[in-house]
Length: 85
Image (tube, rainbow, N blue to C red):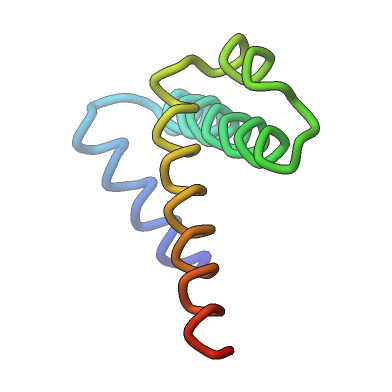
């Protein structure tokens, strides 16, 4: 895994014609942003954030699809469980 990461870092540095520190900084920022979005969505779906609080943090365009996916999965599970009764 370390070898693969080193290869990818070297490739990005070469392709972007930049320094490793800049690439790592960008990767950390982008990765942390995605982790934050995921954490807010999960907290909202668990009921720890209201919809308004979640939208305030990550935006309507992020929350709406996550809610749709959650409802679809919940409905599919409910449908599957009814078939086993």
